[in-house]
Amino acid sequence: MSLTFDVQLRADPASDAERAAVLDNPGFGKFFTDHMVQAVWTRDGGWRDGRVTAYGPIQLMPSAAVLHYAQEIFEGLKAYRHEDGSIWTFRPQMNARRLARSAARLALPVLPEADFLASLEALVRVDEAWVPAYGDTEESLYLRPFMYASEAFLGVRPANEVRYGVIASPAGAYFSGGVKPVTLWVSTNYARAGAGGTGAAKCGGNYASSLAGQLEGIEHGCEQAVFLDSSTHTFVDELGGMNVFLVTKDNELVTPELTGSILEGVTRGSILQLAKELGLDPVERRVPIAEWEDGARSGDITEVFACGTAAVVTPVGELRWEGGSAPSTAGSAGGPVTRHIRERLLDIQFGRAEDVHGWMHRLV
Ligand SMILES: *Cc1c(COP(=O)(O)O)cnc(C)c1O
Image 1 (cartoon, protein in one colour):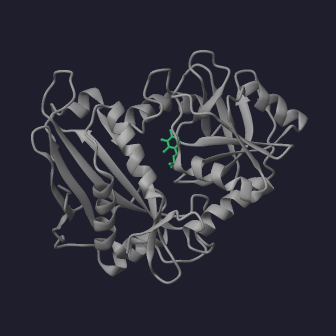
Image 2 (spheres, rainbow, N blue to C red):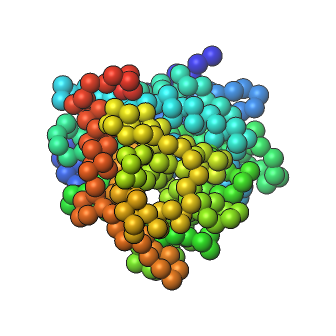
């Protein structure tokens, strides 16, 4: 039976003025809408108690399994307002399927795709006023579905009680002062994920283990870290939360192949599909970090960018590692291919370009 989401409107929603103040300068992940989605799963009863209710604290026993053993997964996607006022999201079926794959890896229950889509629709319908107005500012409403083991039990086994939720947060343009290249630190002391591990699942634990590498990068004046394969430290995996692409002088668009330690980004897959239309040759293969280091110097690599839902496409500038660095190929605002791909994706997402792939899904 499919889940329904009963709407229990809060008595004290933000006033129009309060909401307008947030939407004026939302930043990222700081402010949340009036409501959230909740649902419960039990091994005996399956999914039930779907609700849209006031955004607020959740009750959890101190013994809840997630707090001890990190049995948790999440998703991230955005709701975009189009010029006619309608609200859309981008390829949410891909997020539903990835949530199901992450669930299988973390021994969590699968939330059916129809229930996942219904949960997004239910929340965005109620909190529609929080979706930023159409404009040229790239603002959207970030949606964060998540699932965690709520059973109060300290034994190590898959939980028999699990909760699902969706929260929503207005998101400003990722680059408020215009697109700017990020400097990356090549993390060799830390890996994000290993063979047979959880790198291909979108789970909180992967992020926890990426933080030390990230901090090391910051200590070396970089904004983010790029992680290598954990066994040989020679091949590029990805950033802490973004996939990576290299553009070659022969117009190849190269990204590391999915080896099991890389998260399969929806943005990554979409860019691979768009490549041909943009006159580029998409290539998925192993990418030695040395090829990037040498190519940035010799001119064989003409651009590097990172991609993900939150930042869309981010130009990558200088690469630094213990004892060395490779120069930026990004100029001050990213190279022409990076900017073209970024604009193309945004045009599709905001309804300015025809959706020939059928990627957009209407929410409201
Ligand atoms: C979410 C995520 C991405 C980007 O995925 P999108 O579906 O494009 O947003 C890339 N890498 C990691 C580790 C992620 O968690």
